[in-house]
Image (cartoon, rainbow, N blue to C red; front, side, top):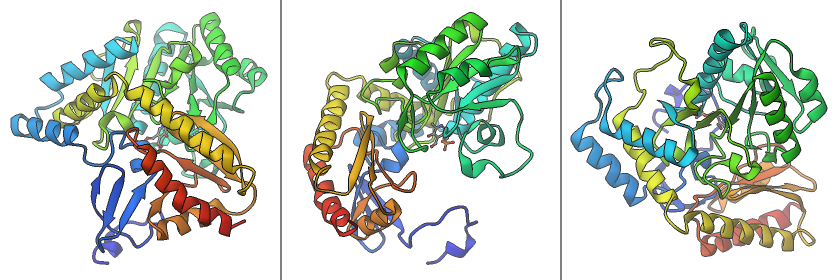
Length: 388
Ligand SMILES: Cc1ncc(COP(=O)(O)O)c(C=O)c1O
């Protein structure tokens, strides 16, 4: 495979070269077709190469590929306006990846701590959380495998077990400036935060002047059946980060915040590709689709359909603990290594993910159809039965 030995090894990849995508399907260089239930890692919310995205990127490319972050561009203004309208958070800062959006949220929280809370800088996060791969976002993450990597870490993160309200309360000190939550821990294995934990975090934030940050990099943009994961909890955070689904496959991310948090001085934060026109056009095209009547209803219908089928299979197959919301779903094998199931499915042309040993995660395009879900089960059921 030409070029393979020129790539720095950062992950283990199968010897498959993807060359084309359409809707729920990918094709490799040998012409083999795959049914894709990871959707670019919860990214391709409209499927592969949807026409609206292709058209938006092409139209924008023909007009303006890049200006410079030192100028406004029309797509940037439109996307900021649209995000404010749908989220209730009036200010947006754009970057390219989820890690950068979270890095911005961390910086904004520290800025807030410096200006309003006597230099408070600590952010409370959760064990099992994943916030990214920059040094600060790795430090914020509660991923066990990160613990001894790239020491020394960025200080200032206190990690409490997910949904442990008592530990959350005990972790607040005069140094705390923010609490950061994933509404569903995606990489951690699809673990939803409890209503009780969110309520406690909101109350503590209110009483102690802390910022409530929702990392919606994976759960935002319709993934859980609502535009944002925080809507399930009846709260409006101070800061929300978005990425993945926002560009539908084009790299774009955003940090949204309340008006009062427009506190960076010019020069505090920025980036060459902040508000890059192609990325902005992609974001706008995705949002226009997601807010169409019936779009989110379809996500919820497909959630119910997948969960219903999994529940029926629970007694006859080796599976348990069906969980998640919208089209961010997972279940566990009662025994055995889910990575082997994922590998066997790939052989048969189905792409799934094992976020944790034992767990299988489904995160297809939000446009997935009932027929495509049936096709997925046709491959999955015999594979799981073999591993019983
Ligand atoms: C919740 C969450 N936050 C942050 C990130 C990091 O995003 P990126 O890989 O785009 O930097 C991810 C990626 O999986 C994520 O799931």
